[in-house]
Image (cartoon, rainbow, N blue to C red; front, side, top):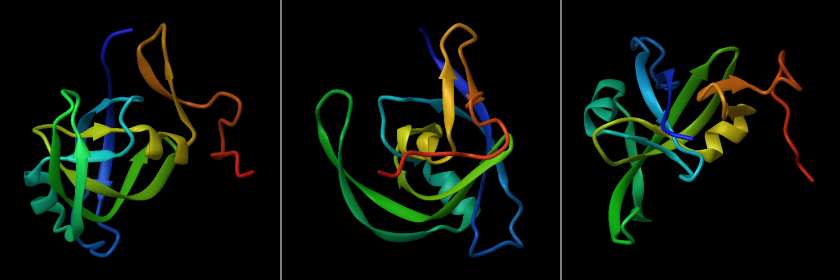
Length: 126
């Protein structure tokens, strides 16, 4: 299918006076979490909550700071999450995608609001 990118907005809900950070993120349904580079953590003044061990694509394990909270906005959706400080670009994983009820449109290669629930996010809770 190729790479999918989306313009998202990241903010720190504990510091609403900070200007939200607009960024093009890589959308990766094979990753679970939001990953941000160190410079984004610094700009949003996100607190480190703990260290987490992650497994990278090449199967190596690495300890990373886990920071938060982070609020993500895309289209008419938003969610609150934590983020791993890892890599050189923002990566949007499956957990925030599910939380915001967003899907990857395979033909258009773009992130879209779930057409079955266009006005409000829905989710399966059972």
